[in-house]
Length: 114
Length: 114
DNA sequence: TCAACTCTTCAAGAAGGATTGAAATATTTC
DNA sequence: GAAATATTTCAATCCTTCTTGAAGAGTTGA
Image (cartoon, each protein chain N blue to C red):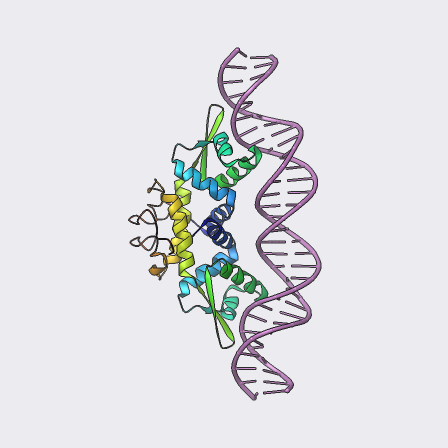
């Protein structure tokens, strides 16, 4: 996770609709949800939902797959873990007490992608 | 950490200048840096630096204290830990593998403020 | 193939954030 | 008190993002 990607992910998360989308998809798990189900739950117009899902997918935070008529969206655990790792990497650099609240025994330098 | 605060923190972090500011201040530690030193290091105009530091302080990510003529800024470890905890809370809800990359042995539900 | 369903794309307008330079405020030193 | 230093505030401009509604494209079943 480099700075441009972290910035893209943070920008995508810095929106109430998309933050709710990510939370819903993470809670749902790898199976994901059909766009129509998401639209019904969050009361979003199709175009608005598509716009925000595309932003999240572009940022590497969700993945999509078509199944028949429906397109299912799921949280991208690699992207989510990456941006969290980038934040923890910054936070813990020389000052592990910063992130002690949420990761008391985490290693200081998080894993990087290959 | 509630949703509006997390959103404010993520919005503040979703900017290249502010992300660099936070990284610099976290690496510097509790002593912080004078605004003039930060401006010199990142080559920022005084008004631009002040604008971004105010945004970070408003979002609860940095703190400031005056010392003589200088105003020193330091990373707010509570705010940083809070937003990371909010992200991990969402990420780990029922799916601890999501944040395993950065906090392999962290507890699933992070601490909340009193 | 036609019709229904599902989702995306497009264009236009509205709203919020970033940068710049000048002016104002606060603090210390002479 | 006056000058110098350090930082903030303000207004104007530009740029990006968000929302909305209509139109387009892919998929399935009759």
